[in-house]
Image 1: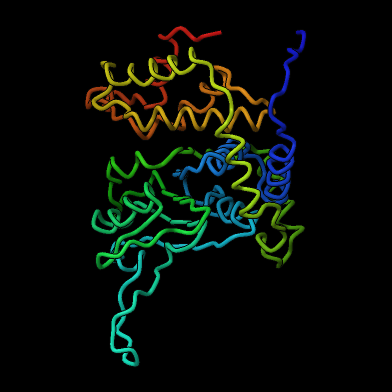
Image 2: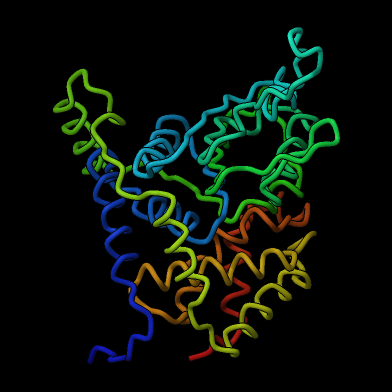
Length: 325
């Protein structure tokens, strides 16, 4: 097939170098899981949060920590438990006897990259503490608003198998995640490589072997490049048709919101830039459609009982819509 030639209007060299550097660093430890790494980088470039779902031991938490290590910025980890309170996340006012007044003590949410382990283990009251900070990058405590530092990104993990002591995430919170990434088991060949790599590491912690390759100034510059990518009007209509179809599909109880449209747009721009293009093509939208939509739609009870998955319905919707070329 003859390779398409196009005129590049935006210099994406710095972005490509940064993406390859992150992939190279994470690849030193993590075997396979290319899609997870690709989507995590895309989320960082499009200022989004990520929900990572997989059984224990498939490197969900490790990969999130490695991504944070690749960026020269703040990192905080919060382990969600059933007894966790909102103040344990956002902070609380503490009385200062010297000054004779209450002072706000920042919680662990005040950082740049926040890893929330087992996000579905905290009850609704604690989950609600994340609503404002994930959407508006700020928290309000005692009537005072505190802005989060730049960049601010939440990486949350959850286990789909063990449901004892877990809570269903509120739809409003799920909608605030740009992607829901499903992490599969590695293949047998990948399993062998994992054993070889960790055997070679010995007692050294994997995270300590990585070097930061990006800083906050670079991230801000790269995000501006992504935002300014060209999106043809017919692709805007394609995104709108895709989202509208979820609201009228017979297999769905709840369709996607306008926030999903924006998520598709922003994520497809990031994927285009990572592919070395300064314009979006339909394949970019199709690549991110399932990670963007699978947690934003709710199956009808009948289809859920039949064992139909959200990904199955998304595939049906894509096949029913004319893809612009």
